[in-house]
Length: 404
Image 1 (tube, one colour):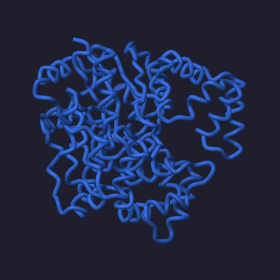
Image 2 (cartoon, rainbow, N blue to C red):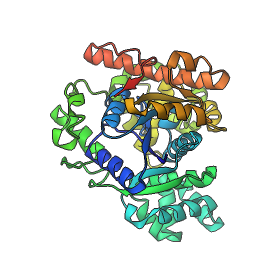
Image 3 (cartoon, helix red, strand yellow):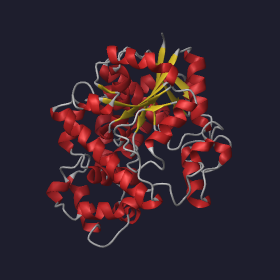
């Protein structure tokens, strides 16, 4: 059996995602498709607009056979660590033959992304010195890397100006870093790009989220017919946003000093000081992030820092998460005709799989149990916001196993 894997967020699932799944099946000839997906919080450091089970069900209705949840330490990380966690997840299952990813310039083939990845891993001395010089000028790391690449690898600088190309390179870096034998397959994005806000039959998740916020509904033309019924109750007033967590964030930050906030994952001392200085007056998540933003720290970097603070993700915990195999992977759902695949995964996986939550989570001990506790906290906070916005008490999703 040939198995393909996809690393995704589906925030929300749309026609472009359906195209990626269909093209992956066509290009790889796989017999089954496994998706590793972010949970209630995503890589930009903000909550997903819809519940993780709704997003998983959308993927299963549109061709995925199994959807696994990536733990928060990986799901809310930088592009580099997000990609590494996803590759470690799919590789650690020991049954995935090929990882498929989308990219703006996939037509150039995986070889180009692999060559850029190798260059960044080798990091020639002159390039490294130029990169550090640009960082010392006050630029963010991403900006400094782009500036250095423009001097040493112009083609790479051009490609890495696009967000999904960046992830493509990070996936290839992760393959090289881990020594994984899993093949890769690049699929061209069928929309106008991650940052484009035009709503059409094929558009970005950003465009759909903006349309939801402005128009009150997810645009029907942008999502597959199979999942449109799932979105019928999603409106601007029920969709979850970062600002819904403002009071929680205020309470959390009020208990921190610069020293304790610096112990949070991906919050260096200077950023901790900036956050706490701006958090002395009342704020919303958005107003705080905007007031902290500067040349050295992008909005997404600040959002991730705030998210890690809210979820109690620590620098020490992140170090533990990066060691060895992933501590666990939770099965969110699967297609009924893929039950045999679940059994095969349980036999082959080097990573503990949480299929039946109560049965399998009790087997986790030590650091793995501690990391699971952070995921449960994230889920509880999201459920509380959802209840406050909609009056709906979310089903005890820790124990839920979705089948389609």
